[in-house]
Amino acid sequence: MIKKIFLLSVVVAQLTVSCTNDEPKTPESEKSLTEQIAEIVKQPYSKLTPEQQKVKLEAEANEMLVQMDKSKSSGAIEALQNLARLLDVSSVDVFSGKNDNSVEDIINTAGVYGIYTWNASKNTWTKTSSTSELKFIFPAKASLTTNNATFSTKGTASDVKVKIQDSYNWQTGVEVNDYIFLPTAADAVLTIDNVSAATFTQTAKYANGKEVPNEFAYKMALNDGYAWEMSGTKATENTSKAAFTFNGKNLVSFNAGSTASIDKLIEDDNLTQYRGKANGLVQIMDNFVIVANMDLATEATDELALEKSLPTVDFQTKTYFTDINAYQIKFAEGNATNFNKNFKLTLVSKKDGTKIAELVKRAVKGSTYKMMADLWVVDKSYTNGGYWDYNPNGGTIIQYYDEELYLKFNDNTEVAMSTYFSEGFEKLETKFEDFIKAFDK
Image (cartoon, rainbow, N blue to C red; front, side, top):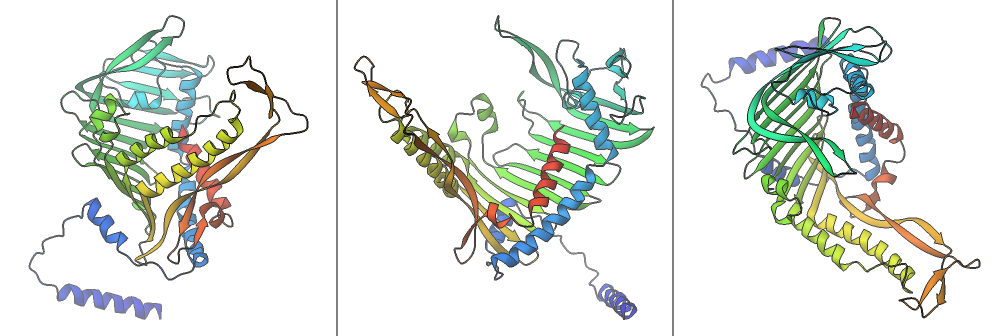
């Protein structure tokens, strides 16, 4: 039966090719992020119950995390983690000053040279002068003492000069800085046992001396199939893309756009009017998509308005306990309202062409604290006419609130994500946390 199906598919494919018009077709242009989102949010809601959706979500998320989990055992990742560890054990300064540099600093340099070899017996780096390369020679694993890995990088400098804080003397208030030229291109290669294990490429285009590039692209490719890519453009419409793939198959990807004025925000990130609006897509494997539409400028304005509206809390006043409990609930509810107004998030099944649920935030009761100093003692010598003292027979409860995400389904049923994913998802959560920790370094 399988052979018949296979032969039938071959015949159909052959007929399709034979009947195809030879005239070239104009390829469809790629839709903009805004157009993609507009199409997705038009999709109807799924008719599946929340429990049925839960089963599908769990299966899809588990497939993604299984692949992610495998990446933690990558020899290249382990080697980079060990390099980061050794740079913590014995710091180096590729800028010939005082700064302790990390792996990220090493990649983001141009015109800096030197060969650093790890000395396991002395737990330090030995530097050899070079006029052509920046290289680190070290053990690929923490358990090794012999140097079997090399990490070398080269870059082409731009004319954009930036400062990196080198050291700060808190007693004198004197700050010492390193000054570097940002690279327009940088390449790095990691080899283990003389075999290429990972490559890194980075390009950037700058304008008007601004440190944030107008165009940026970065790619890390591991020899065992994993790749992490990022790219972005700064313009009236800023765009940013990122993808983590395995042998070309998407594990998780991000596509975001915003109207924020990046250069203005670098000068002062408190200028809320320059935050603009943002939208984005987060795709998990080949199916689930989270759609986001966000008004960042209005959100920042609403946040400031909320802060100004909160009651003043002062332990020295007689209304302290009333004020602090009012503050806690108003702050949490205000944040939830702000989120729901300005952040529109929707979970979509790409395969089914249906919306699963909207993501909303709610303020819910959290932990409590019983404060025993709730006996008000009248004393006219105090500014507020008295003070709070310990009350062995009392105790006033201070109620704290949490802000939780809820899934809001088509029938307006709302289920807390923590509850919805509480059964069957514990292992997935642990896997994801472990994955993030593995890449933190």
